[in-house]
Length: 213
Length: 266
Figure 1 (cartoon, each protein chain N blue to C red):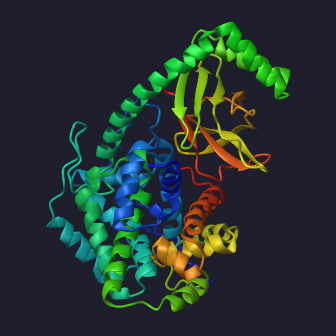
Figure 2 (cartoon, rainbow over the protein chains, first blue to last red; figure 1 turned 90 degrees about the vertical axis):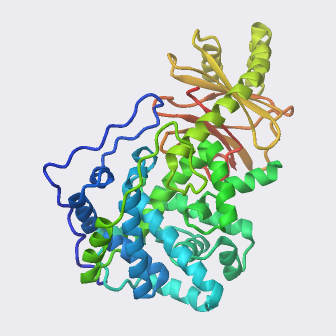
Figure 3 (cartoon, each protein chain N blue to C red; figure 1 turned 180 degrees about the vertical axis):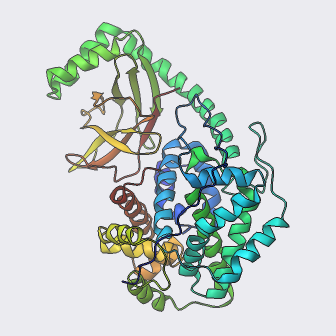
């Protein structure tokens, strides 16, 4: 295991205003407790310094996820830059009652990386069989990783609790960027089974990692 | 949409949050999310889960990237926030959640209107109070329900603030939840519910706004598909009552697509 570096700590600016409190009434709101959500609220108001701080907090994760899906370092960097700029541009559209800022940013990252994979795939066929082998190997080997050891270990442990089929399906879809139809083809199982495995696999990961939304 | 197609749609939450769907499937599922609070809440928790997978991939960005991004930002105009009354533009992306929420709220009110109509029927059924209660008691007794369940059901049905919210299952059958906030308890009433296959049972769930499900008991309907059973547990902190089909004895967490979801706050 090479994961020795820690995640860059969040540097709070003492003057950072608080994010607006949640609206009340429906009982469905969550308190915007995460520092990243506060930062994003500042970014939405055009605060350059807040954006620089946000960059330092999430750029590594955005790039790492893009790299994991795309594999090509140059393309990954391009996608990461696009995503970070999109975060700046659309920060006002982030809604803390609907999920964490981190998930918002990483959802955007994954979507864009996958879009890139699919548009590239239209012109050049990927070797699907190689994809499968790599999935098996990759969940042990992460180059240049700076994710915290705890985070990596939690994910490894959680993936380890899945059944073989759940794990393969989730990894092919998430890290491989394959559609559920492609995953079904790769694994030689019916489409309905893949849909179910993706869902119950994620549910198990959620419960194992204690994700509360 | 047939019940089968409907069940298929619900099952797509996993593939959806993993971006393992085509653009057409995504559009169809997002329309579904507008209408289905259960899927929408589940998608939110699964999206956080996927983010955790992604978060473990962090790597050091190359030196020039920071400058490039900050410079580009300095030259890029930001989009204004969506106002509560604004419609989502046709180009709405997944990030335009405010618009989606507004649409969902509108549709929910339509659904609640329909629910109220169904509720009227159920209320009439329950409204012949004595007869209905006797029949409920008979049903509970026939099902071997503990005396505690009987008492719990009676107390809720007769609570001054008892409210009934009806829902239609994704297959055959109807269900309604009668609940009393002051009693902090609820009763599930179902009719025409299909008998679960052997080795399977219905299981009730209390769902928190974040999508966490807590088992609220298992049941099998009688031969006519009828059931009256307490929703076990406190309603505090929960937003929905859900119903799924699970292996006999129940599951620690839902493993199948809910056939019914009833909001506790109208």
